[in-house]
Image (cartoon, rainbow, N blue to C red; front, side):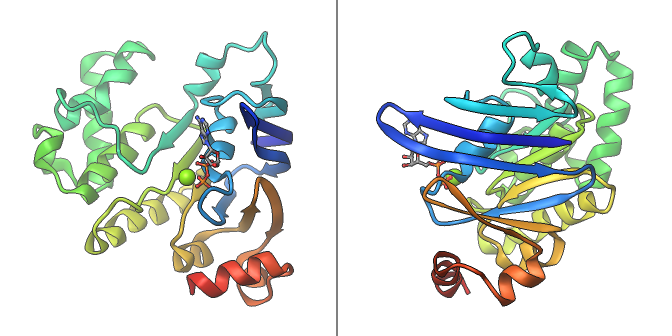
Length: 240
Ligand code: ADP
Ligand code: MG
């Protein structure tokens, strides 16, 4: 579903990604972990071309995003992204946050989009908040709306960049629960996270990034019990 081949990315003289190659199969859930500044966000953003790789190739569902002939806007419609800081539209109600893109981009009718929106809000436990504005919601609720909004585009892939890092501790669980239920639907997911327990429980594979390199790529049972590299061992010692 996702393939990254030899991705390099520099910002000016700073080389942030140093040749990352990996793939994510359909329905696979991959946790991306590593120290702050190791390039996790940049890597995720390269997967949907929010950042253009300096070199290397990215494919999503057979389409090469790094090919200049590809209509990136179109491919990106199938890639949902959830950020640390929600990025909801503040001037739209919760329901309107969910219906806006399906109506304007996918051409759904208002009633179709609202029906789908209510269904998604029910799935994330927020149906009763449909008419509220984002500033009335807790952080955990905002993030659940952000996930529902991404799902409203019927994505093939969901990318999460530290979705719980900006939340108060008591709200982390409700968001992780929503993500966990999403894994059970067969969604293909890449999740940058510092929630080691969650990664261990839901991920099929752990990608460990350090200093712009993919240092380990292994099942969580192996990664957490027996990290191969000193770099991963040191990281886990600090985290656990
Ligand atoms: P992580 O998500 O693992 O913390 P990032 O991918 O955000 O790491 O950042 C990796 C490095 O790239 C950091 O040194 C960061 O300062 C730098 N960086 C990220 N985005 C930009 C940008 N748009 N311009 C310049 N430097 C950036
Ligand atoms: Mg980051």
